[in-house]
Image 1 (cartoon, rainbow, N blue to C red):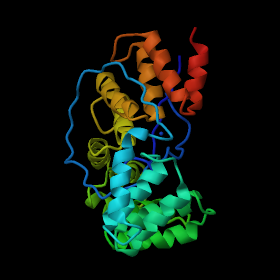
Image 2: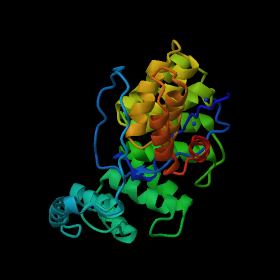
Image 3: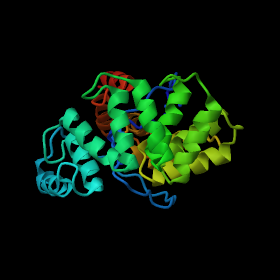
Length: 313
């Protein structure tokens, strides 16, 4: 039976890792899910550890997390309506955008991101740009977002650089497609050890877009992305190990990376891991586990996973 794998390019929009944009062959490369806005952070040094695959567990994404109410109160107090610590204003913006200790309110998020941006916090600018980019709390305005991203990138925000790269890749923000510039901005973000930028740069090396096709370099960049916390980097590594492209083919290693991506709620990774369990490729055959994984992916709007779930008795 013909099966399908999926390779993803990472869009980092403002809604899921502090830091956002797919083989059995998924037909096309589609935009990824959203990722959490950036608090200033540094991704860890990349490591590769192939571990035994275990059962994936679903992690629901709440729209409001009351357990973070104390942290929200602290951030709000220290920001002091823009008169206090600018980094804390960025954190208040993230709290409002993500529902951390307070109900989601994109307009309030934008207000606090602007406080941070006006006080020279580059990630505050990048997060503000993402609200305009995605039409959250404001009418969608990619031109305005692009200008804010440029300021953020110039001032040191990896997210700003990554988002500019995506604008050049997809002809957004008033740009025509320019793969060289896209790769250059992804490189700038990756040089700042941003996981999502590294994954996107890996994609460019895989496709040979704006750079010379280089599979070993692609693998290294996907490894950086995965180790730094980007689930799409883990998923893409799984794809490469399943195909044996740029690495020695190994279903077991593919399962390991798919699981890492799935445990971070990457729907495509859950779907591909489900296939491996359904057919017993690199893992013990387990149709119940396959159904669990297909449902997890289907719940995150993965069409092929929904079709696979309906097919299994």
